[in-house]
Length: 325
Image (cartoon, rainbow, N blue to C red):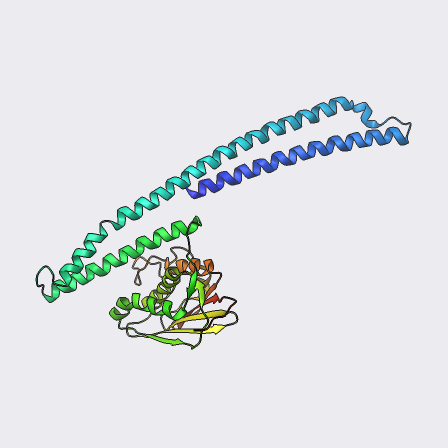
C-alpha cells in the first residue's frame, strides 16, 4: 500500500466519523428541541401543542433508532480505524526494515569495489600506467557518488517519517565550513574551481549536529559548483546576524528563473528536466539542505537571476549565551 492510498483511507475514515458524529448530535438536539417545545406549550397555553398530533412517542422512537444506528456506525468506524492503525504500524515497520536492509545490501558491495580500486590506484598491487590510473580514479569517484546517492535516498525516506536523530553540540561554524569545503574538493578540482572564503571574526558558536550541518553545506556547495562554469570561483560568506549566523553561498552560474524558485526545494526537482540532463544530479541536494536547516530551527532561501548567478542564504539561530570564538 503506497502513501497515497494510506492518506486516502485516513481521509475516508475521518469523513465517516465526522458524518456519524453530526448525525448523533443532530438527533440529540432534535429530541431536546421537541421535548422543550412540548413542555413549554403545556405550561404557558391551554391550546394543545401541534406536536401532540404527531405522536411524540413515535417521533422519539424514530430519533432513538437513528441515534442507535449512528452509534453502531460509529463503533464500526472505530473498529475500522483501529484495524487501519494496526496495518499502518505494520507497514511502517516493514518500511523501516526495508530501508535498513536496502542500505546494507547496496553499500556492502561498494566497500570492496572502492577499497580494491583505491589499492590498485595507489600501486600497492603493482605498477599501473597513466591511462589505467585515470580509469581507476573515475571508478573511485563513481563509487563515492553512488554511496552519496544511497545515503541521500535513505535520508529522505527517514526524514519524512521524522525518525532522524540529531546530536546537538556546541560547534564552530568555520569548522563546519572547512569540513564541507574539504569534502567537495575533488569536484571543485575537476572543474578548476575555488571557493573564496569570507568568515567574519569572533562569530558566536552554534548549537547543532556537526554531521548534518556539514552535509547541508556540502549539498549547497556541490550545487553551486555544478551550475557554475569551469574555472568560475564560488563565494562562501559567513557573518553574524540578529541572534543568528548568516551563511551565504554565491555563484555566478546559470541562475534560476523566477517561476522555478517556488519549486526549488522540492524532492527530486530538476531545473534541467530535459532528457539530456546536462547538469546531472538527483534533485535532492537543496531538499536535504532545507530539511536539515529547518531541523535546526533555521531558515533557508534563494535569490537568483538567470545567467547572472544564485545566492543561497542560510540563517541559523545562535545560543542565548552568545559565546565567542
